Picture 1 (cartoon, rainbow, N blue to C red):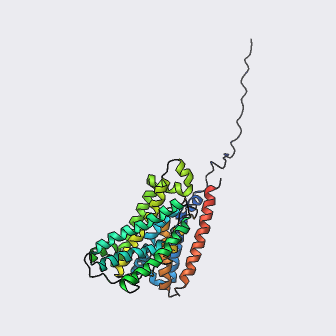
Picture 2: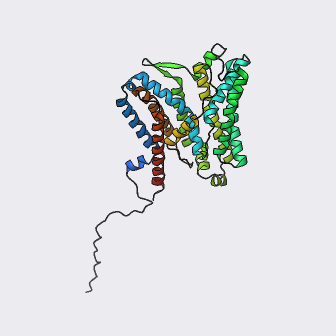
Amino acid sequence: MTQQAQPAVTTPPAPGPEESDGRTARRPLALRLLARPEVGVFLGAVAVLIFFLFAAPPVRDGSSIANILYQSSTIGIMALPVALLMIGGEFDLSAGVAVITSALTASMLSYQLTLNVWMGVIVALAVSLGIGLFNGWMLIKTGLPSFLVTLGTFLILQGVNLAVTKLVTGNVATNSISDMDGFEQAKTIFASTFDVAGVQVKITVVWWLVFAALATWVLLRTKYGNWIFAVGGNKESARAVGVPVTFTKISLFMLVGFGAWFVGMHNLFSFNTVQSGEGVGQELIYIAAAVIGGCLLTGGAGSAIGPVFGAFMFGMVQQGIVYAGWNPDWFKAFLGVMLLGAVLINLWVQRTATRR
């Protein structure tokens, strides 16, 4: 009889630790969350709030929180389009004085021609959009950096604001328009207040949150949002795949113009008059709020939620110092610390995101 050979039984080696390369390795959830700039600025905003809740007891009052939110909203409304522009790879140094240009246009046109204030509001919107269109067109046609283009616009608007106001009104401020037709209706939209549990809240807080939600939807859910990230990352590559770079860049500058118009209308209908020399330096506040919110200076990265928390940190510090009874001059020091810290965090986020 012949015997059939039995197959050899081999024992598989004991399973060792699963190997993975740098492309498939997943970092811990906490580290991945912290790599999101929105999370970092959110934690920073919470830390600043907790600090002032202890350092400045008046902050705990509801009316104080309402004032802080109002201060944050006037910065945040402009910080949103500035942030979108930065994601698109550009800056706008004329944003601060453009706010005053818009308010001056509406005020002087309505008062000097005795028109319904809504006519001034509409013309001011056209002027603001025109300033944005001019900035974007100059950028595209000349190829100059947006820093230089908008610096020139900043100087032009600063001089025009002062010179035209003095020429028309004989003063550095416009006349009050509080008794003109349409004023109360316009104030309801741009500068009214409403009651929440006995606390008076400015309507700009609502507009701020609405604009933030809209900007987030645009960035994350629309083709236009993809275009913004694409032109900010590499405009030549974006153009090669069919992204309308010219339209995207110009429209982003016009969005900043729209924000300047809206904040300008709020200023006008809150105080009834406008000081022509204001607005200088505010552009740096808007840019800093966007940077603190996670928008990279190199473009191509950022969000709309981050600048919301960045603006809140500004409002919190600005009002918190007052409620704490400290010298308001410290605000600039806090501002510098926050900006430097945000830049370092953004640098870490950028390195973490590209690490294999």
